[in-house]
Length: 93
Image (cartoon, rainbow, N blue to C red):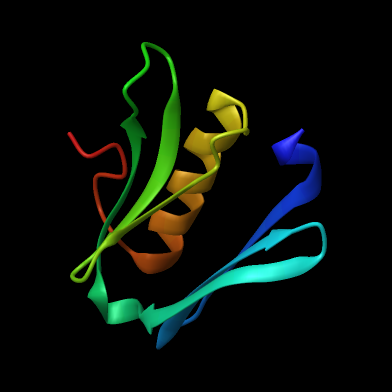
């Protein structure tokens, strides 16, 4: 039910990135940080056997998202974000 009523918006350009989390049409979290602070974007296993999330790790903290996407969608998204930002080794290996 949460996935049906929530939205996530990620905006990245050469200077800044912004992550907004929305629930039933209301923005309840907005984070803005410098794009230069991004250290890594990867898939990360959570405490469950087959559950992964997309993770943007910056110098200040990490941001997880995409929990309700399929594994292929998560892999595609991480790859696209890494290609856009020219970060090598998107799988973190």
